[in-house]
Length: 135
Image 1: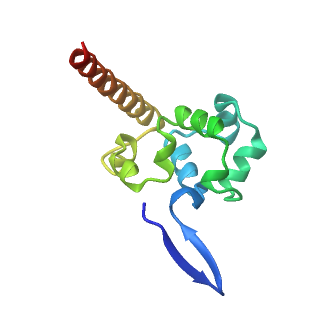
Image 2: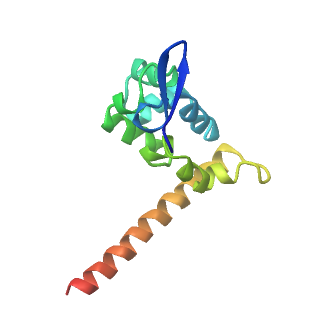
């Protein structure tokens, strides 16, 4: 995502990149899977106040603990970069299929699992080819 500078009463605000706030995108992703804040905290092993700070845009992307963001992403079947990269969101199986028929939290979960499996399989295939070439 390109960075843009906007002026708000002589104050600069950066949009995009590591300085962006991801609360809205995170909430939309949680809604896809019908996952509550409490359940996300429990499954991602993060504190409620840490999640609240993210959802309320009190912290920028770069200020979020990397381990917490990684755990949140795993629970929501995406990579941490999903929250800052529009191209990744556009290619995301769950997001791109929301307007195509009935989407339920369960069907979105299956799509997320399939997407993660596909990415893992691609990685393993690339690794296999690299190992063949190196031997």
